[in-house]
Image (cartoon, rainbow, N blue to C red; front, side, top):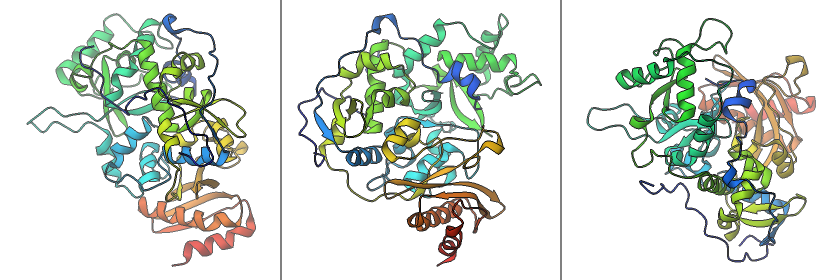
Length: 448
């Protein structure tokens, strides 16, 4: 039981993490994400309900206890699960966000690195994606790519629980792109005969105009992916590799039998487990659900109501997270701006007192911390950030921001470790917001 918390009363049975369901039964910019990918979907009429009354809290947590619970739930407190490896990280988090930006590495590589340390980058790719057929047996996929918090890698076991989103996409008109009669069927036919294929291999990804000027084949295959008839089984040179779901998803998982309520109950429960403790908005944001969707199922999700000092809002927790005091080693590492620990800005400010914002799409003169500022996590707290780049074998800290002198050593450690991981032999500091900390940081970086 978490120290200082009231003993929890009996809670509803929580769903087993990533339990298979019963049998039978290139990065788009924000404009498009708000449409096909991450925007909240309409709530099915069968589960529309008014805001429910929050039941009495089963535990009261201090802000520090909530922070430690969140860190452990996200894999940053305690011994790393090296046996589970990258796939274990994916299953534990439930979703790993993809992004085209590559500075030190792409975000889906940075997520396991932050938790496990210097994982081989090829090992990361191999752990996520479906291995090629070896001629003896069909490859068994470990993950698929779909719209969750954003474009994410998801454990293949969760395919049935995204049926609610596939149904919602099929039920509403498509936007931005028209599709000629027969184009959709032609892509499906080609994949059946020749797949797995990239959009280029299907006839070209673009028409030659701006980045959103997709070819007919690209429009068709992306629509098929949203509908669930096609699945992304990997990336080839960062291009999506598409295959038919009937061929790529294990037979026992390939169904849309679960109703919206069951899908949402599962995803809300998994979000709560991955967060450890969170408000309604925190939980909804994890898989980009609507608040009323969360309200409709949270009482049956296995999560229990709690209060957290200073939060000012009702919260819900994973009962297993309340059962033991979070202890163990803290990771010192740089975080991807797309790490699920800091996905939701309000949550990050509430838990860590740290304002996090990706400035890659902010005009350069208006940036405060840099293009791809990576927060520094150390001792369970966010102590600064760095905007990194690579120049040959040198990792360049273009801009460093620290909370104070005590953050110098952790930043130096994190920079050295990151440099080694990406094959850089040197670290250079170009700018630091507190000039008086420049010399101490350089000294720490160069000390044996």
